[in-house]
Image (cartoon, rainbow, N blue to C red; front, side, top):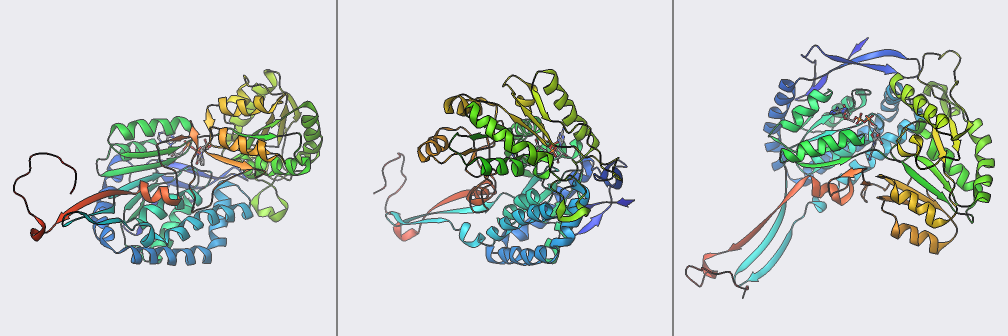
Length: 499
Ligand code: NAD
């Protein structure tokens, strides 16, 4: 069995804690590797080394840092298939989807090539007599990224790209469920020219996370994962004086208006609801058709498509629509929630509970489920299931439908399917959710916009990637300067308007 490591000062370093987490092949249920779980001492040591390396990296001009990003883009493209294979084997998602995971991370690294432009400051000539004023964006120092299992390439790249391009050193604490790809990415960044110690990958669990939160040298923490952990990290990190942004769970609603193209809406729900086995924070897990006729038309189209979904291992190739979920515990939790749906009176129209795949009986596969007549009090409506389970909640009117999405505690993404511009515009303006799709089911913004949810899906005031990331990973210093020839008065005791 493969024994994974940490990545410290530009090389793989074994763990010393004696504690490990198993890394599974979710398709077979077998343990394929184990990953060391760092102690506080290991984490603190990695941070101290990163702080030393950051001094020269922070002083490196932005164009040289951008060249490292540019080289990394080429190398990630070169290794795309190798990365995607490893990603699929630890996460379970299909090969094509794994490449998409890497691609959407890569696009943020491409954006970071613009660091010299993005890091330019502001300058006011002659703000007063002989006085000039300028602002500069400086790196924070050592920052940390704590990432989830469901995008083991994309989200680490979203964290490391902007953090490093801004001149910081980064401690990356990836998910212990699929840690290999982040280690491979660290190797790629070294090959791209990143100096040793500037990116440290420290594997671990709560102990490592707590050590990050309590380490005084770590200036900022970017987290992505479930909402309870996001809230915990946000409050402990903020209490310790760090800059913190945490992105949490989701329950994304798609509203289907009576005038929508029902075939398009059904196709969108299939991809957005069941792709990646529903393990996406932007998955659609709630369909809200407006009017009984809309609901019936949608259901009629959805059922045969759901029943035709091909579930299998990534090795089966393009034939597979989605793979297993990440662990046996994840599977158990999904099936437990499905059971609550049945018990609480929802109609289980497509039942995937008995799904089994010949030759892969021990894999963590979950068949597709569709519930109809779900109500807003049910657990399957209120909680994030993070599996291939779509709930249909029938609304009588558009106002009732938008009200449901607005009243839900999560606010990551949402979509409306309609041909009516007025309705779409009203939806986009009124909804209290961070990312909105109009006839687009998974509205993940591109690298040069920003990504972030509202309500219990996002904590902190800046989003991920795009211009916000360059704000999050820098701090602004403003200098007011005057040279001796411009000093006309003696001591000044009062504030006054600038002449
Ligand atoms: P998770 O919260 O279990 O783990 C995320 C990270 O936190 C991991 O690195 C993990 O090691 C660490 N962690 C876990 N338990 C901890 C604890 N008790 N104390 C400190 N750290 C802890 O999330 P996950 O299961 O890996 O990922 C799935 C979740 O992430 C879903 O809720 C999904 O919606 C969410 N997610 C959100 C976004 C977004 O942008 N909003 C994107 C992707 C995933």
